[in-house]
Length: 403
Image (cartoon, rainbow, N blue to C red; front, side, top):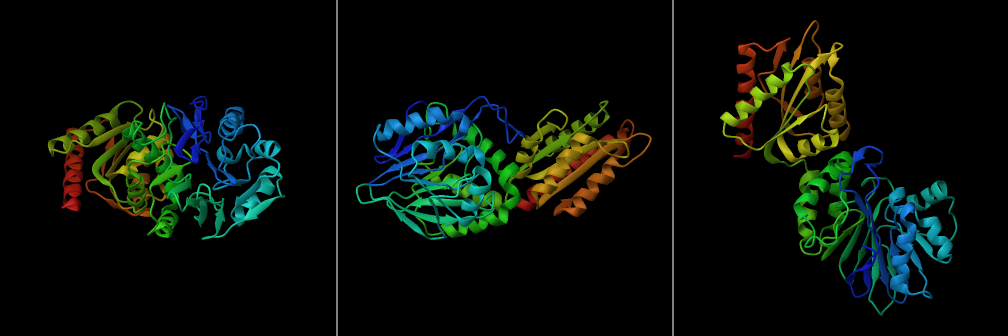
């Protein structure tokens, strides 16, 4: 999308799409790219809210010029978040508009000096402070400090007249915006998945802070949610606000993520028996992931989505198989809790894999199911039946929890 897109008569989306970066933060896959959303509000004064990655500056500046023309300038740049995919164009933008004042939280202004060497013409704002852009468009910006969603300097900016919430990384997700930017123009089901993957892997560790941020927004009428990644929510902003509330409370849907790893097929046989037990219990909502072949971010996403998690692993050097160890370490790091957990696995000359999974359950806030199934080398018919029982028990426990 080469042209700026109006959100209303005096507010534009001036973001860019990135379809070339393969890994967000050099960790998370971007199979369909990502957008960097920036916004321009033109009143008597002109404000830009967040910028874009520096590699896209030329296309970005062209959008600004298209809205403002060759003579008009930018008066303020509001910085909701200092991560370089949103602040990377600040130095270049200041070269073009040298009198633009940079507006942000106290921590943001501190970071500006360390990251970009910018210390002049800045403005610190606190929670509830306002910035009046003039009378022609009626834009008054009110700032809400939301630290640790998901950096310590983060804030949100609210346009009081038009009831637009510029939310920074909150409410955003992976995926480029193909053709349209609004929730009523894009494949919103795809973005639901990618917003949850973004939330669970990047923001999820900070759920208590998300709840505090949502509490600060209570009673604020919001017609549009405009994040820095993903779609702009104008048709149903309550959908994304409600999703964040549920996810940050660790609420989940009825379903199971069944994640396993296997070196020679024995743990795979056990996984298939667990899945058969779930099916025998009439429980079809199951997502199966091979931890050796599925990027861990997708497994974490589904662990956040569903009430049940079942993990299966062989023993490797008296401990967990490395891909499974990576998964449980990330789940522990993200502080997911409140899930029903099932465990199975296999070992050969020495045990340790299943023990490590049960220790993971004990250290976190998980409800560990019986039976815990461990087979030596190849599973016996008794082991196979125990795996089916594990699947049936998980189905029954989830139904009971939802009753």
